[in-house]
Length: 253
Image 1 (cartoon, helix red, strand yellow):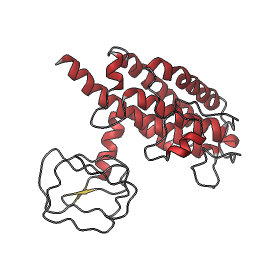
Image 2 (cartoon, rainbow, N blue to C red; image 1 turned 90 degrees about the horizontal axis):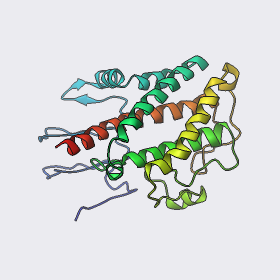
Image 3 (cartoon, rainbow, N blue to C red; image 1 turned 180 degrees about the vertical axis):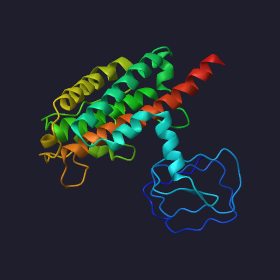
Image 4 (cartoon, helix red, strand yellow; image 1 turned 90 degrees about the vertical axis):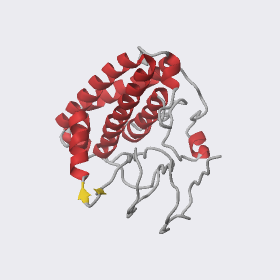
C-alpha cells in the first residue's frame, strides 16, 4: 500500500539519507530550497513552477522556459500580455490551439478521454478545471456574475470539499466531454467578448468581487484576473497535448 501524506509540515527541513525513494511522488508542495545531492536513478521527472532550477550545478531555468515557449507559443503570449491588443492576441492563439486539440481528442474513444496519464487529470477533468478557472477569474471577479460557477467545474487539487460545496460544485460528477464542453465553450465565448471590448482603462479596473471564497481578501485588478485565465488555458493545453500523445500511442500500439 502506498503511504500518503497530505497538508503536513513534518518533512520541512528534513534530511533523507541512504533511503530507497524509487517511485516517490511529490505533488502540489512548496519545495523552495529542495536539494537532491549525490543521488542516482533514471526517468526522473520534475514539473511545476521553479524560479531557479539547478541540475548538476548548471542553471537550466532559462533553457527550460525557452524550450517550453518554443513548443507552446501561447505561453509567452499569455505571460507577457500587457496591452488590450496583447490580451486579444493571446486569446486568439489559445482559441486556435484548443480548437485543433478538441478535434484531435474527438478521434479517441470517449473512455480514453477519462483516462489519467501518470496520475494527472484526464482530458475531461482538464476541461472541467478550465471551466472552473473561467468561472472564478472571469465570471466572478471580472464580470461579477451573481451565480458564476457551473456545477461541473473542478477547482485546483487540494481545495477543501466544503469550500467546493459552497460554490455549488459537484466534484464527484463524471460527465461526458460534450456535457463539459457546453458550459466550457460558453465561458470561452464570454472571454472572447471581454477581450474584444477591452480597453486600457478596463484593464486597470479593480474588481468588485474576488474569484471565490477560498481566495485571499485582497485587491483583484482586471488585468491580473484575465492573465490568470490566459495562463491557465496555455499551461493546461500543454498538459492536455502531452497526455493525448500518450493516449494516441497506446491506441496505435
